[in-house]
Image (cartoon, rainbow, N blue to C red; front, side, top):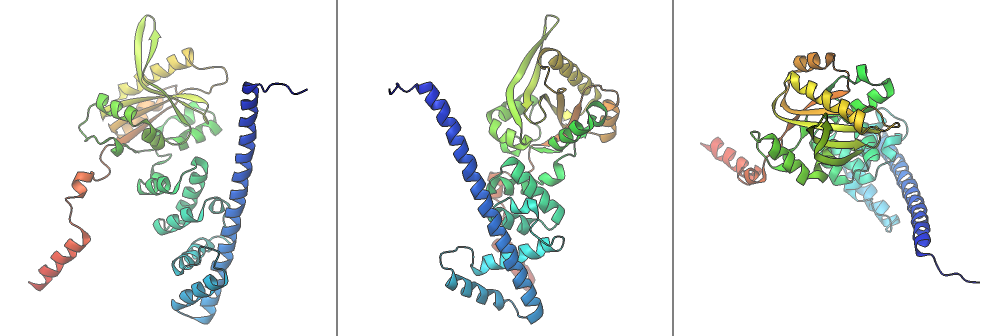
Length: 343
């Protein structure tokens, strides 16, 4: 006997089925990508060894490209430019590895090409490979993070995590913080007030979350906590899904002052008392200020009993578009130099 379909039950079941198909498809895509990169590694290795033994020049690459495209017309990736990129990619990593590094093999070829054109240090390149996998960055996001010097910022915040968190949790928490944070996407100048910065960060919450990094979930701005019949407002409150804790962010438009740490410590005590669940880890505070003196910060955090990090932020790291259009082009600069040399 055929029963009527229970729509709710059916939709729940279909969601599970779709998730399995997505997972399988991603697994296949990952496997194919790894195989392609292993092939590229062998191609790069063979070309490098043959070039070294034969002493043939740059036209050698062009002839390889012609032969491979003729033999495998259905396979993309054998243009002269890409074959040269394969060779450079192999030479870059083979200085340290005999086989394709695991993190490198996990990201698409387009990401790999971008990394080796912009990064000259293997350790830094591997960092971007691993971080791309962890955060699921597309190529545009990866390029933006490289240009914003994410490698130099991550884990550089001044904090007291070693004294306030267990070792494993402390390490993950410190890797979550950056210094400085780049807020040039909100379009404000350096003299902007705290409220204006907070307003724009909220309006651009997607970009703000991207700058904060993976794992942040936005819970609200001016988040109210009542203590002894008095209302207090936390600038911005988040929950971090990997750290499994609440994160309170306080914004200060000026230079760091020691009393800021005391107030944030007060907020964290309230969050731990009123919001934190049994399974949650200790709440963390992030104080973002325009400037800070490292010695002052270290003194201020020394006897604070709640985990806290102090970082700077930048509002105008990038050149505004309206100014970019007024800057001379490379051709104009060269023309002026030529005129100067003739006079």
